[in-house]
Length: 112
Image 1 (cartoon, rainbow, N blue to C red):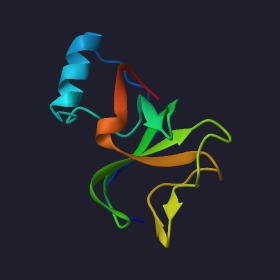
Image 2 (image 1 turned 180 degrees about the horizontal axis):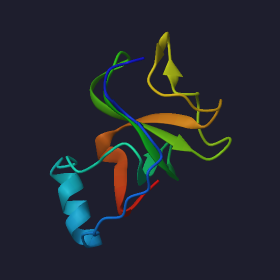
Image 3 (image 1 turned 60 degrees about the vertical axis):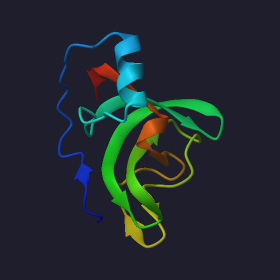
């Protein structure tokens, strides 16, 4: 498996949510340091907004920078958490996407 942060367990944690405008400002400044594996997010992917759960954070072999692996609903994704010969996380086929961090809206009040 690729190195990066992955889901270690399925513990459900709650934390305080900043206002939407504060969260958008943080995203625009590139400050996503509070994003963690297990967090609920909305991802802009192929001109659609998809709700999902962060399953991987870190570098990927197929692109520069930090990317986020997100598990989404059935039929909404394009892979199973593996890209090329590298497995970043395990999901059912068609339920995973990878997106740059700046395409996410962090649903900070929820962790799945």
